[in-house]
Length: 81
Image 1 (cartoon, rainbow, N blue to C red):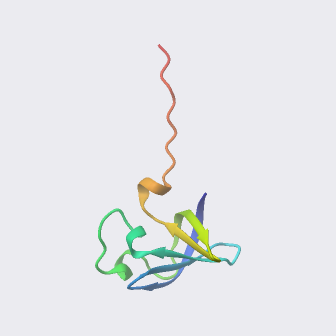
Image 2 (image 1 turned 90 degrees about the vertical axis):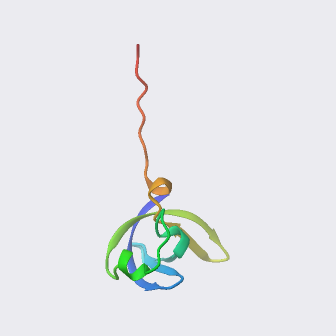
């Protein structure tokens, strides 16, 4: 599921985001970008609204990703000959 969420905290391990419904989720450091991030606070600013994909929910913890290939939806229309 692709969702829009607001960044409410950024730390060395990742970012905490909040869905419009008020539910919070974690975007781990490895899922913040396709590339290695040394300074996560430069990539994610508190208060920014970004698009995420929900990866899963395990023991009441929701994990999301901001990696573009994992949240981008590509619509491919077949070409008719």
